[in-house]
Image (tube, rainbow, N blue to C red):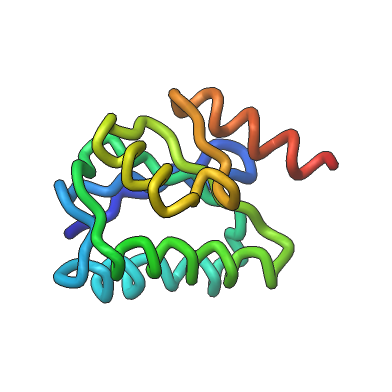
Length: 117
């Protein structure tokens, strides 16, 4: 897995290029995302467009990231979710703790609104 990063104002867009966020790639995901904390980039929008499956380890990885960001007064959003990933998110009730958006623009705007709150 390789993550691609870009910055829109105070929001970091992270594109996941793996079809799965699972036990195989979770540690690599965590390793690649860690430098954002060193750079004090605590507002992240995850582009999930390439991800078609998540297992419990992938879900745990996202929850751990969310919790770490919240400790730093940051926030996280996900956008561009496949129907399959949406079902997984619904089953795991993650829609209650993650902000979900259709597009990058909506995710960035949603995170900006959270920063103003």
